[in-house]
Length: 165
Image (cartoon, rainbow, N blue to C red; front, side):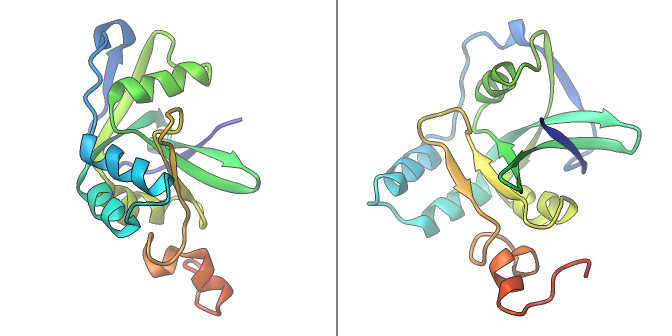
């Protein structure tokens, strides 16, 4: 079952009818190509992270009593924040999860916003899933080199201070 976590990456919320989306699937081709190369063991993860930080991404949003919320996925004791390179890919993910059959609330933010602003507000150890329902899905675990060091689970294991501890 999905969990809802608090965080408003940007003010405002947009709701769109899924019928309005049509088949427009604007993606970040350079990022998708770089991810595909990494998955084939011939790419550069540093390049993926640079592109990720500068790419506009889509996230599912909800309004709760505490404000705006991002939905995370609990999996094997960890939390994952799904982010998408297009609104169509986000809507396909929501439909597959049994949500958003009629409408979808979403937000746009950059990969830098995800890593630097959203993750600190989510449970410690939350990772990022890029394009979760696509062939080029990429998990960005909460480790040094991907997330800020105070959010990295490997820094905690090495004796670093955990945020909020």
